Length: 472
Image (cartoon, rainbow, N blue to C red):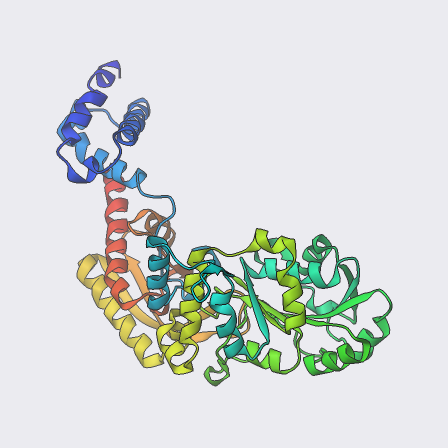
């Protein structure tokens, strides 16, 4: 063992051997040196564990290819691109919605140049950053005024803090939802200073439940759209028009948290239960909040629209500065909203809508092309079959609806589905898919056409890595 340790090349020898490699030369030298030391320590541990028993395995020309792969792998950015073959369109863990091409271009423009972020080009004086999106939001939704903060949780918080701090907010017990990350409506309400007043039962709440709860301490009536679950069977909820009547009778604002929120009606796709923002505004909600990066298909943002008297009060809340959006979000959101000025354009150009509304024929065609790419990349080692399956919208929207499609089932000789899934997390780029009944599945709905070959390459990388480990 001591002899083997002495045959390990020095850091200097390795750096000299790597000196002519363009990929390595592009990396910061201190980083490369640290990674070389890490690699040598791995080699020492392999000697201790008798994984390396011959001097030839420590020769410079033997170690360098493996070392280069290690350095390039470890030097990759921590935050990076991932191929989504899960079939979950608005995948929270994978960054939610993809931006449309005009939005991507707008972000690049905002980042690479100075802009009129808070500069009024008409007057030459300081302007409001919200002016870039307020009018278009009002045009699309029919609201009188609009504001954008950094996410919908912030939107709910600032609405409650502004309109009902120290006062009761009446909410149906069946709408006290929890979404991802342990975000609970009662907790947010408590932090805002508003006082929760629950009414009704879990499955049934009536108009008289709200009316009997209204008193001198009441600050607002609130509806929370249950985007991420449904209560079915013997159920009853009070409609927004009914709450509007109560609000008018008692002089109370009606707040609606739409959660995911959508500007495009998907009822024609068989996806029911998600009212559009336009419908909610038309039905009389005073203030409505919803997310920008879910079904809307834009950047992360919490969008507030509604009556001017309430939205203007929210704008003036000092907390608003802590929640304001940056120039990149503004640029992406405006570009996305402009696509909604024509709904056919929005459906065609916004990736989230395009994936949700993809035809069965287009999905089958994409599945066949992916299968062909897999066979070409992996040859006889892979068994590829097509099967019917289902995708999901994700992001807490349409929880009870599956989107039918065509899945690509993959079996690689000598490799289990679990092994393949884990190995794909270390490919470049990583690929995330799913396993059902022990079968590894790729859903082409969430892969762009230009990503099909990348997905096949990732599976080939994963298979090669696993086979190399087996040989060692």
